[in-house]
Image 1 (cartoon, rainbow, N blue to C red):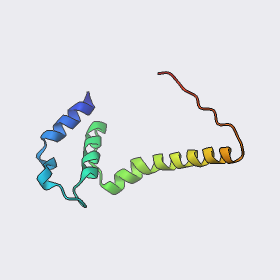
Image 2: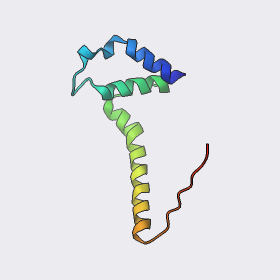
Image 3: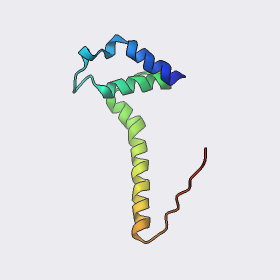
Image 4: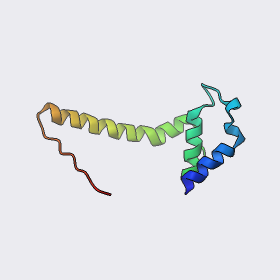
Length: 86
């Protein structure tokens, strides 16, 4: 699997050695971006680009659904939870 291969490669890569870790500028977030970039076969992105391209749109969608859910509940609406077997 590509996920397993990317994680294994990252463990062998010297750029992720613990001695290089820097809390504010070279940290876990950079690691996650690097691994996901490898899995998605895209160039490694900056934190800002990764956040605005991948995280922010999904966060906005989630916030809209959460707001809608709360609005339905506050109006005594019924929320039906579908469980789909996969």
